[in-house]
Image (cartoon, rainbow, N blue to C red; front, side, top):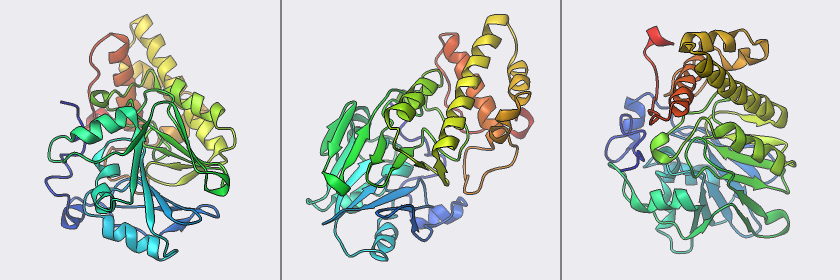
Length: 314
């Protein structure tokens, strides 16, 4: 069984709003304008992107279960147009959890990358199957002119179904959890994720979508293109250091020391939790986790799913 229930330790059956409060997850925040037609709703799981088209609204990701009404309330604060489509960047329940609230309407089309769609349709743990109407493998264009949406898949990273959603007229891209909180991402090997593959996947996105001036992360803030590139450079450096360390028989601590000794990597090695980071530790602990994951992959072992590390290992 795939580890679709990656957040099952946080979200038990139902995922009601009370569970959000009990686990310290912040509620839905006021909608934030990113560009002329693109908006972002933070809180209660992953970011939800709102794209206002000529005759309807497209949502990208729908947070944890039980948040549909809250999402709709924020959408209604900017437009009365109906919801016409939901696009999911990947299959984790903090991004697809409230799909059903919108997909119960037969007029709402649900779109996902093929690998993601397989997991969504199967469900897992306490999370039921989720409807997907339209899939794509590597690329799909939807609509024309200012309404055009481009969907891309470049390979494994956070999962093996990470979609990049690009709005060309607005020059904005939603990256999902392959790029979250401007730190090295969570890798879910049980859902096909790979730390070794991630830098190549992210680099392909950078060069294949040159018009993306702003990048909406799966959790956290909107970032610039230069910040996206610096994040790619860090993750590529992390993998290279893991490879060198493994080849020379060095330790995980040796690899961490090399990351610490690279001045340009300092922003990705902080020891304080970033705003809105409710699970997953600090940038520094995530870097150590991903060194561990990369080195396991290099040894040909099944890489572990590590959500966080105890303080004495960070």
